[in-house]
Amino acid sequence: MFKYVSDVSILSHNIIKEYIPEKDVAIDATLGNGYDCDFLSENFKKVYAFEIQKDACDKYIDKNNESHDKLSYFVKEPVNCICYNLGYLPGGDKNITTLAKSSLSSIKQSLELITKNGIVSIAIYRGHNEGKEEENCIINFAKTLPKNKYGVMLHECINRSITSPLLMIIEKK
Image 1 (tube, rainbow, N blue to C red):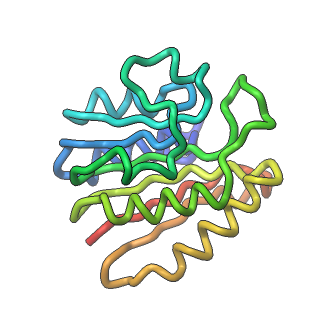
Image 2: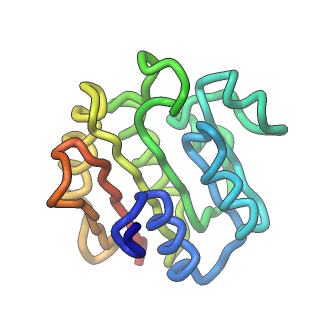
């Protein structure tokens, strides 16, 4: 196994640990099986989590069985980090996926909630139709972000399948 070129979630966690100076509040915008939530809970003082599938929420206490496009409705405080793992729940119903429209809405909200030096981490799983739509929508949006306010980096494995996951990091100046 490679040390750097590995699972996008591991890469995301390493970036978050290394580059976010204040670790007060985080959001797991797509709870899923809870791996990001567990990581964030170990590293931040307070963590919010969102998930549309009740089965995923039932494994955790005090998590919102709500869509990530309602972040700003539930979170009223500055946030240092927001993690997204878009797509479908591993081991779950592959017909239930995140959607480009709600994901983009949520990401726009996250940019308002995120603090200076905060990071939004977006794992984009593009191996299904909606994932491809999300990829195009999110990348096109990220290209329009003002470079004097946000730094955007896209991590992609170029010697693997064209449907391998992407990791986008948005850092607020």
